[in-house]
Image (cartoon, rainbow, N blue to C red; front, side):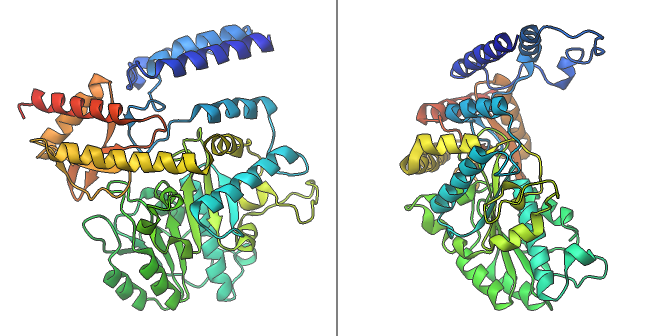
Length: 457
């Protein structure tokens, strides 16, 4: 029974992956169209395992979005590289709870290696503390919680013992064009989004240094400052070197939301665009974005491992004491979790340093190619300076832009996503899939042209 079910799932997984080159990117059915597919009452008697898998695949088919397709350009989604997907099958088969190095020694060793490799690739200090988490949202939240605890400790306040009632205030500064993930982190940490000082940004979404300097001057306590490596619409980077130096003058903590953009620091030829980013106190980065790991995987990185462990560790008395061994649960909010670092290990082992760098460089070059091609076309305007893998496109007025996007998505051959930039509707293209090449970009251009012509442009 077990063998038949696993073989059925594997057969369908392989068939799905092989179909990506020719299949529609958009799902045939949206939520309303799936009504009745899965909402039958749970039967008293169970079914054969292989039959369950066959029925699951059949019922799901119309509602599977092509997130893994090289023609998917939405939301900075990685394409779940095949070697990572294969390793993820092993993760489920092994069924390891990855909290303890004593209970899951191989997984702990693998994840330690992932952390070490990523620190080296990203050009961050080798002795940083790293937690492998679900993604950048949790990575941002963890780092902000740890920053909160550290900044309060400097004022003689122990959060773990005394909580936040009556605690000294911590000024929080964040760019006006920050992503929602660090804002969620501020909420989860108890700072409140509304009390954060929103620092003015330029036309690419970068923090203005003069505005940051003025905001810091108003702080009466060491602040938490959140910077950004890769603005979601423009791909732009805050001026890290200068901004972090200003924060240090005020004895503050600098956190960098680097969900996708921090990966560019792995490429020597692109590293200067993030000059100074390694001087921050903490960083958040996704593995399921530019590394193309399967969902869900990200890294919470702190310059001080002790600070991360102090904020996150909640060991139960029943867990073995492993002495000085690095414990996966000590640097995340989770005690029970799957071995989510294993697929990233397989991907990094498969690509090597040169493969990671080639992929990131290729994507950035394709973004420039797309922007240059569309800029030469009548009816299209590229609204951002292309410095990473993001391209923000307008087709004139908002109605036309929205109509073109709807037509392109409805066609199903490619899938860019919607965005709003500086009050304007945009078509946002994120080039992140490991398999995307120039032919995919050419098809995207053709689809945009055809959709624009349908509107009389």
